[in-house]
Image 1 (tube, rainbow, N blue to C red):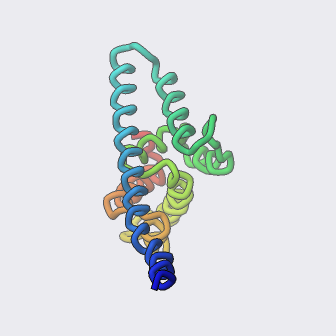
Image 2 (tube, one colour; image 1 turned 120 degrees about the vertical axis):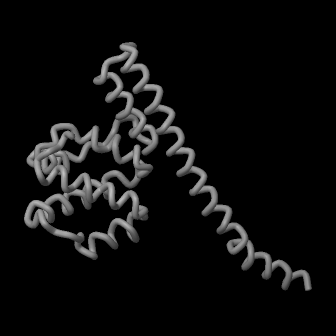
Image 3 (cartoon, rainbow, N blue to C red; image 1 turned 180 degrees about the vertical axis):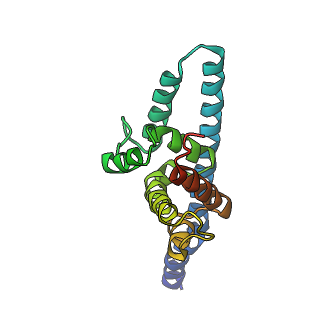
Length: 168
């Protein structure tokens, strides 16, 4: 009898602990979003008051992204940055900040930027395109876990960059 209870507990423990892990991840994501909103608000107020420069705020944003990803300095993907540079985007950091404003997590940024590049090139080849490639839509929604609002933001941003109107 004791052995059967022990075996039952061994098999049921992972089932009972799974929802807690899922809730913990969601809670961490929400706290990351809330931390970003607080930092963004404080730094924008400081820039507007003249306490710090825009460049100093940008450096602090980079430090935040590095800290959240568990690094001392932010990882820079030079290939990705060069692609955006060819499209007329001189500061990929500003795009990252705007993506964070849309509640896209730091861990998702590189994947989102890669998909955004594909989306931009898609609009560059066909600017009258009504819908995006379904595979790209699935990539954003299923693989990265973006919401429809976030995907629509990326579509708008991609159209602006593809038309050469970035920054706004």
